[in-house]
Structure formats: structure tokens, C-alpha cells
Image 1: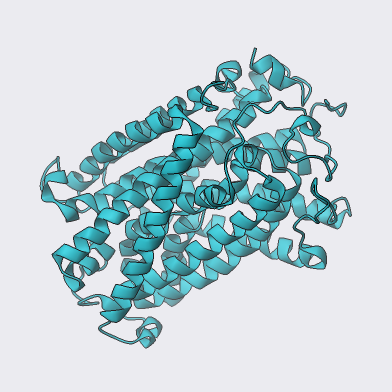
Image 2: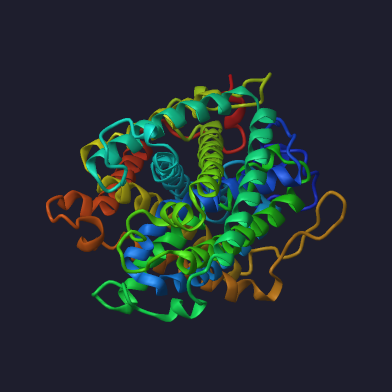
Amino acid sequence: MTTTAPSDVRPDPPHSSDDGSLTEFGYHQELHRSLGRYASFAAGFSFISVLTTVFQFFAFGYAFGGPVFFWAWPAVLVGQLLVAACFAELAARYPISGAIYQWSSRLSNLTFGWFAGWIMVIGQIVVVAAAALALQMVLPAIWSGFQLIGTDPAPTSADGAANAAVLGVVLLVLTTVVNILDNRVLSVVNRVGVTAEIIGAVLIIVLLLTHSERTPSITFHTEGAAQSGLLSALLVGSFTAAYVMIGFDSAGEMSEETRDPRRTAPRTILTALGSAGVLGGLIVLGGILAAPSLTDGRLGVDGLSYVLTSSLGDGVGKALLADVVVAITVATLAIQTAACRMLFSMARDGQLPFARRLARVNPRTGMPTAPALVVGVLAASVLLLNFASPEAFLAIGTTCIVMLYLAYAMVTGPLLITRLRGRFTVQGTDESGRPLFSLGRWGVPVNTLALLYGLFMTINLAWPRAAVYDPASGHWYFQWFTVLFLGVTVVLGVAWRVFRRPPKELGTARSDASA
């Protein structure tokens, strides 16, 4: 079935058709539908990857906020749960790869949705690079031999930044190969990795809490917070939580490869974020309570790796750090997979350069090979910034968060407008007659708060604070890096939209793109 709507408008599909068929959306089933509920959960959880992101950004959050920065965590978790609830509704109604692009396009129009997808996929590529950089926070702490360049492993040093780029490139080669092999291999790696990460996270929490040096009341102390004031310290400290709790939409990205996606994806979006949020918050709390010292400066530089090896001993600490390495590897893999699905989804609509090749699926493996190579190469290119300056580490991390937050707002915004106009269908059933996930009468207030939260955090994260982005006061381009990067992304998107060939009618592009 193909659409008969104008090329810039996407109609709502009926909600009672077979989840296993994409014909109502105008597509053919080419990706292999082999993922179950746990594999879907693993896709969202491994993108969030609390062990990767908490270990990567804990030191930064503590350096600016001190112990009180912990309270930014539950605030961000509540805000992201509002967004996730909206996404769960959409995942039940639009179980299609390229979730952000597809949802935004169908709620507004193709032009607006295209920019949401464009910003999202560029952001995902930067997230892949940022996740790969996390190895530097762990591997040298396990064995000094992993410090291949220089002697200083701190990611804020020239040696540490360059070494992080080298380790990251090696990891990207590995994840790119896995993203080409077969989606069953991908699923097994994700499930095993996520299981190991959950077990490791629980062990870390238990061990840190049982080795506490102080009580939880320390989180109300402002010692160590940035001199600019408590509010500013919390706003900057929220970067840690904001960086951790993104990517839960990946369960929606994998909808075309998931069995019974209308019921599975909404559940796994919410459970992946909820479980990761709780585990991550407890790890942050445990790290603050178990740190040998809150004032010697090491917690704000070496972060949780220092806490584990100092409080638990080298043997146990390094064993747990090895589990963190597994988490980082699986996280990088999952993020790259999500970016691949976004490229594939946009390409099969003829909405990207080289669309025919990017939209091609290997019939044997069920994997879009070209997107995996493109994401791997571009992410590796982003890592080269680390050779220019250690400050690129933070610029890369915060830029990717801003890109994803903005893309999320480009979904919750049109969704709210659609609700207020009475055009969003809250009822609906799957192929078995079971009701779809719905917020019901809570839809408008939850959606409104989700949009306001998303816009506020986008501005907070992108604000060019010199103390954050250019502490050495010599690289203005790093202070404005996020704003400049977003501006360049939008300009390139406008150029492509203006000079590209006229778009094909939606729902018919796939057959041509795969020709």
C-alpha cells in the first residue's frame, strides 16, 4: 500500500494492522525480524549504558557540583521519563526504524521530520565517538600498558586525549565489523553485554555502599561546588545525568527487527530508561559515599575508577573495571547500530545523499552494510579532534547530548500540537486486539512538561560557559563548539534540501532506493 498524500505530509496509519507487516507504511520487510523482548530492552539499555557514561562523566559532574551534584540525577531522570512516556506512545503506533525521523515526519511534515532525523543521526555519530572515548577512563587504570601515548592517562591531558582517540578508533573497527556480520550476532553480543553490565552495576553498588566512608546526608553539602553558586553548579553538574540518560529510543529504532513491536517497544523504552536511571543514580551515590576523600582533588579528576581501586583494592577494583570495558564496548556497538538504522530509514525514502547504497540491506545477514561503514568512519573522524586539544573530550560529549535533546524536542513539540488539535489517536489496538500503550487524559500535561524540560536542557547544555568549555581561555572555538557544530549541521541540511533532486512520493521511495 502506498500513500496518496502530498510529498511533504505523512498520514497516520491504522492502528489495528499486523505488527509484522510494514505495508501500511509503504515499506517492505527487509530487516530480519528476530529480536525478542530482552533483545529490545538490551538495545535501549546498552545505548544508555550506565557503566560507560557514569564512569566517563562522574569526575566532571563532581568537579563542578561537589557532593550536591547527585541531586541533578533524579531531576533529569524524571524529565527524561516524561519524554520516554511520549515516545512509548509513538513506538506503539509507528513501529518503524528511524524512530525520531519517522515520528516527527508523521506528526508534522517531511521537511520538519527530515531535520529532526538529520540532527539526530549526526548527534548519534558524535555519541558513538564520545562513547568510544570512555575507554580512556578505564583501560589505563586496569593496566598502564594501555597508555600507548605518553604517560599521563587523564583525559584532560594532551597524552590522555590522544591515547583516548587511539583506543576509540580500535574499538570502532571492532563494532563496525559486528554491525556488518549478522543481526543475530549483534543481538547475542548485546544481550550478553547488557547482562554482564547489569550484574557488574549491581555488584559495584553493593560494594560501594558496604564500603561507605560517610552518610547520604553528605549529598546536601555544597563543599566543592563551583564558586559561581549552587544553582550554576547543579546546572553544569546535570551534564552527567543528561549524558547518561539518552538513547532509550533505541528500542523504537529496532522496531522493524523486533517481534510484536507495538507491545514490546513501549515497554522496553520505559524499562530501559527506568532501570538505567535507578542503577546509575545508586552508582553515583555509592561513589560519593565510598570515596577515600572528597577534598584531595582526585574524585574530580580520576572519578569512579579511583574510588573502585582505592576503596575495594586493586584486585576487585580492576575486575569490576574490566566489566566496565565490556559495557563501553557494547554501548558503542548499540549506539552505532541505532545510527545505522536512522541512516537506513532516511535513505530508503530517498532523503539522503547516496540513498540507494545506504538503503541496501544484505539479504543474507539482514544488515545495512553501508550505513555501518559510514557511521564508523565519521565517528573515527570526530575522534581526531582529541589530537587537537584535550578540551575536545568535553566538547564532543556535550555536543552529542545537545543534538539528541534537540531532536527529541522536535518530536515532543509536534506531538503536543497534534494533541491540542485533537488529531492524536489515544485509542488503538494491536493485531491481537490488545490496547496500545496510551497516556490517556494525562497526555497533554505529560507532553507539555516533556517539551519544556527538553527545551530547557537543550539551552542549558549548549550555553557557551567559558569555565566549562574553555577553561584554558585560549580556544574560543571550543567554548562555542556546540553552537557552531549545530549551526553547521543545520546549514548543511538546508543546502541538501535546496539542491537535492525533488523527493519521491512517500511510501514509494523504498523500492527505487533498493534497486
